[in-house]
Image (cartoon, rainbow, N blue to C red; front, side):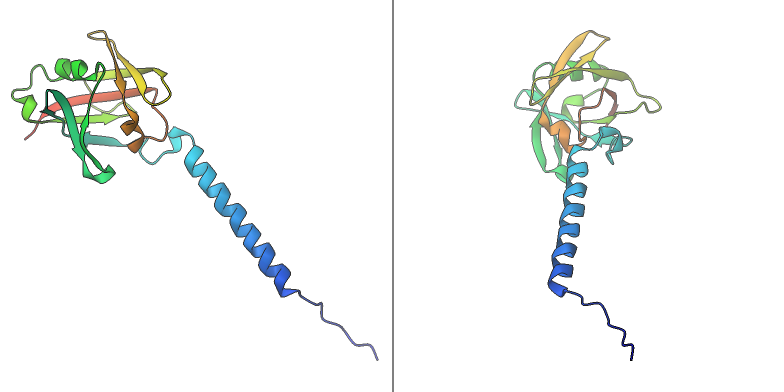
Length: 157
């Protein structure tokens, strides 16, 4: 008689290989999520809005969605903001700052990335010519520093 034998499946081996496959897939997902190109970031094509205001002698902003409260602008950026809001009455009480890594209709100024210092990033404004340092809070909005930031200031309605 010819008996067919069923292959023997080692359930421990199946479990180990399944675990390894899941671990590799998870590791790749994490790696590419952490090290992906900024152009693939969910926010890279987004237009975002914050509402800066004056506090303790400098410009700050709050953004509860990313856990920032009274986040200060420093090292040249307050002077850039002063130039941007020169024609907005009572801007010190708050104004709407729209920004994006891509051009959007009606943007007023373009900030161009010049260099990183390992923690923050320097951006240049051409008109008027100035340079400012944007702190690591930028990474709450972008996975990598954009090569350009397009900005617009409006009064708060």
